[in-house]
Length: 107
Image 1 (tube, helix red, strand yellow):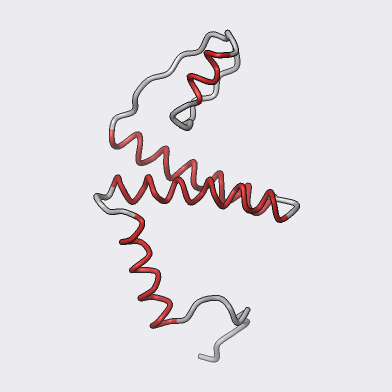
Image 2 (tube, helix red, strand yellow):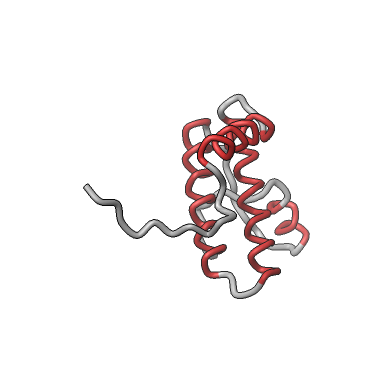
């Protein structure tokens, strides 16, 4: 039996069960859950980097966004709180639309 040791989406156990396969799960405590969300987000960011076409990028972005929603909840916030911070930073420092690549700054 393969060993995964990772956070999965809520319906994955049901999906596995419907295939007739045996599996085991456990419920994480808050600290484990937060750590697992962060690790999973890192995994998704790597998958975005490795994506080979627009559809794959969008699929991985959706996964990353789901994790961002979950991480916001863990910190007693929601995506609107994250969006407000994003907008504030964008108004103060700009976004990334101009494709500016900083090469060096003189001391």
